[in-house]
Image 1 (cartoon, helix red, strand yellow):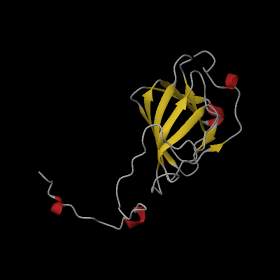
Image 2 (cartoon, helix red, strand yellow; image 1 turned 120 degrees about the vertical axis):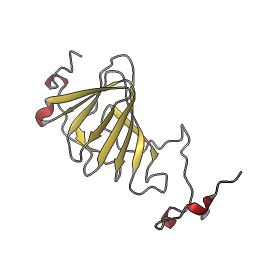
Image 3 (cartoon, helix red, strand yellow; image 1 turned 45 degrees about the vertical axis):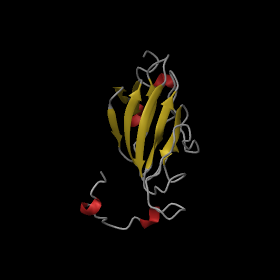
Image 4 (cartoon, helix red, strand yellow; image 1 turned 135 degrees about the vertical axis):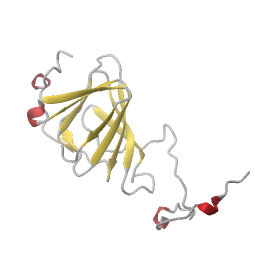
Length: 160
């Protein structure tokens, strides 16, 4: 049985998202075909599933971020971008605040929001297993790497 589409009404103009065929349709990025040409910050490796680089998206970046066991990113921020994250697997820590003296820990199933222009460091607490995040930001994957801080200056990092 065909669904009744008469109750659905297009509001707004989505014609800018036309594919080369002329059709406006969802775009699938197949697993393994993600775009690796995206900004990274040290030990945080990002690949995009939905981004301006390979889909018609213009105001959204959605991808996967991995940290190898025990690694951490360099200090960075995401400019004007609002960032949402979800810990898909592993145990994470985010350092923030003046001189990165504050941190919060997360585990699989936790969500996080990082405000625009907030300097932070993303860490994998586990020395044996990778950490995988799903991350989205608008308008794009802005990564501004900052002067890094030594491991010994991050409270509780060496003793984790």
